[in-house]
Amino acid sequence: MSSAFRTIWWEAGQVCLIDQRLLPGEMTIVRCSTVEDVARAIHTMQIRGAPAIGCAAAYGMALAASQAAHDAADGDSQRVYDHLATAKMLLDAQRPTAVNLSWATRRVLEAARRLTDPTPETIAHATLEEAHTILAEDLAMCHAIGRHGVALIPPRGHVLTHCNAGGLATAGYGTALAPIRTAHEQGRPIHVYVDETRPFLQGARLTAWELLQERIPMTLITDTMAGHFMQRGAIDCVIVGADRIVANGDVANKIGTYSLAVLARAHGIPFYVAAPSSTIDLALPNGDAIPIEERNPDEVTACFGRRIAPEGVVAAHPAFDVTPAGLVTAIITECGVIYPPFDDQLRQVTSGSR
Image 1 (cartoon, rainbow, N blue to C red):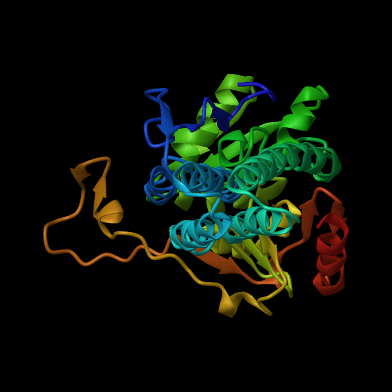
Image 2 (cartoon, rainbow, N blue to C red):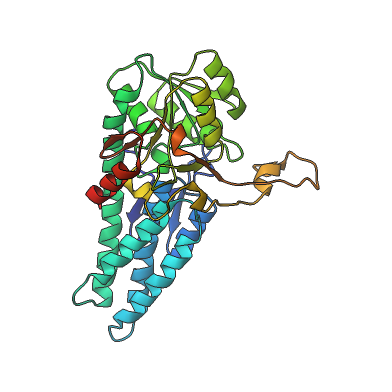
């Protein structure tokens, strides 16, 4: 993998993406021809990671507009707009915690509504162009996060990360992995401790795979080992991604992130969150208001089709948790690094980037 790695792209009227459920054992490209295909890919986690599913949803909207334009009779633009509104509702419902999803669908819908003399064809063109723009912006934002965040990595370069916030979770370069990639490209010492991230194992399957492709030194650990390595002085800082950052700086990220933040605070280790401005949601005042996705408990009681818990066991599966702003050392965005208190600075980041 390189910085030119593509997670999702548009080709011959289809949305193409890597089936992340099959990595690292198999590289399979999924081709989505309808908005329903894209919604299914997001829900089943064929594509995952907040920025990546935002890009996917944008292209899903473009597919919806294209199909509606093809079916529209006598230049019925309103029918295309109605179909886009329905497509937005479908896509937004698939992963409720990641705000990038509704942010991207709203941008595409607004781009279509800005047309002064809309026709089915111009609406379809405008939605596709906006989706292309969202993808290009995400890649640029990730590289900027890398440039801003690399200075926060201590000289020894021992970084702990959680879940997958690399190229596979974005348009191709990553958020939490962006400063790590940048440090490696600069020839700086770097060693990544990778949490396996139960129950879906995004760290073990995806982050470890990405780092191996880049030849970045790494050590895979189980989630429950993080405290041990912090206690032994092996970790210099923690960098994680985010699925939603709300107005006061509370952060929703993959389940287990909050535990890492508590451990980092107990051991005096900096805890950084890396995310583009598209992940910031100023409409919610604090983390209590963030919707937490509850996934199928079978993903806890079974692992890749093989049951690991006795029949009849009741399991819970919140896919995300919320880390209070008070545990976050800094947030790395494409606009720079911001420190507590986050409120005003988050507003400045969003006003300057949208």
